[in-house]
Amino acid sequence: MSVLWISILIILGVASFLCLFRIFRGPTIADRMVGVDIMGILFVGITAITGIIYNLSFLLDIAIALALISFVGTLALAKYLERRTLDD
Amino acid sequence: MTEVTVVDIIGYIVILVGVLFDLLGAIGLVRFPDVYNRLQSATKSVTLGTFGIMIGILIVTGFTPLGIKALICGVFLLLTAPVSAHALSRGSLRFGAKMWKGTVIDSYGKDKLGGPQIESEEGETKESKEKEDEVA
Image (cartoon, rainbow over all chains, first blue to last red; front, side, top):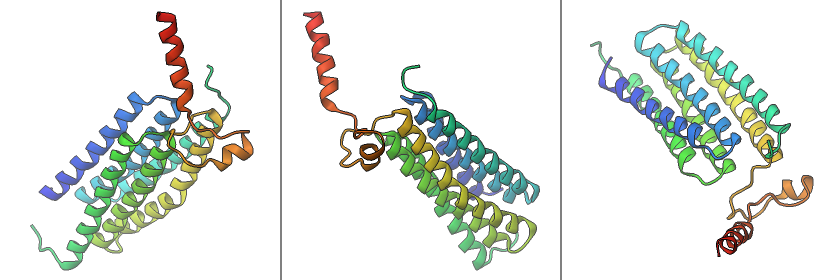
């Protein structure tokens, strides 16, 4: 595990913390959903980088499953968002 | 440490460019003023960045199981991330999230929702004036 991989993981972690900031401080629900979606895609990248560091190919299977779950979850949340209004 | 070939260096450069795209997308997610601007910045650049990470892994490892799975994962992300972003932006427009007040045109809101969904500066000033009157 060289300096390159450590710095890449640190940069991805900083990006995830920026998404976390948007999830906590978002003015509306839509902002929080955007943060969750982007954070899911970033976690896919982190899992793939970990897979290449330790040379484990099953971590890429986990990354594919994570991308699928993030996609379906975002579609369900967007469908839920269409049925709501700002009042409640 | 094993020897580093030229192909490895090209793969590392592609991975680094992808990671920098990820970081820029996350910074745009924090800095932009509006739901739609945030969605545009973050989704485009984060999708491209993660695809770059996957292509870099394919270049570094070659056609091993790890590389082929990375290619499949990257193509899957490239196909599904724009779909989810489209659904999110449509849902938030129907939900009633207003656009930033510097937005120039809103054709979808004008056609389908009966008026542009741009946040007005006058309403805020009216409310603040009313509050000032109440205080006075």
